[in-house]
Amino acid sequence: MEEISPLDTIIELKSCSIMQQDHLVLSDVDLKADRGEFIYLVGRVGSGKTSLIRTLNAQLPLTDGEGRVAGFNLRTIKKREIPLLRRKLGIVFQDFQLLTDRSVHDNLEFALRATGWTNRIAVEDRIREVLEKVNLQNKGFKMPHQLSGGEQQRVVIARALLNDPEIILADEPTGNIDPETSEEIHILLRSISDTGRAVIMSTHKHALVKKFPARTLQCENGRLTESDLNDQVMELLL
Image (cartoon, rainbow, N blue to C red; front, side):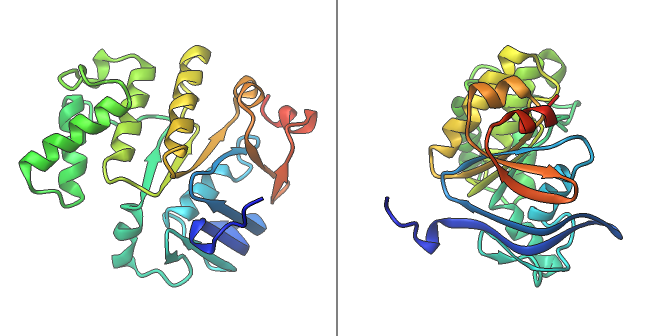
């Protein structure tokens, strides 16, 4: 088996404590993710999945252990550097968080302008590219309420891809959509990992994990452990 180069490691946590304010959520966390890797994050509600994702994007501070994400040290990162880290991350939310008063195109344009894009031609080209990647090239004029749940989630994924991130963090991206559409979103995220991006997807969908097996990390009893897709893990998804 080919040895992994250190350059392939894009996320690494060692002996970390994941905190939610003063509450210890996960202790002694070790996590390593390489470019192009797809990882499930499973566990019951409140087990620490979202807190871990928020720590990776520096929404929650890392105060204990060692952590590096996309070249940034989570222990020493300065406030002014956090936007630079987040440009290397694409975040996919369960509840979409789209701007309801503007079209799909204008949602994407707003996100690009907010991250420093000023050239109008470049903005239009990038919006077209990401909409094509999620198969919504003819939906740019639509308002969010005119789209199905699955289409809205595709817009969120398109938004996450705008700045060509190295990592996609997807927090229950199939939580609010039907099983068939969930599979479509999952396949899309897997195809994104095939382009060399690391994708971490938290989920409670039993059928999805069983049908599309991949490396699985389990949050349970204040710990993060590597797990096989066995009955115990499946119970955590019910």
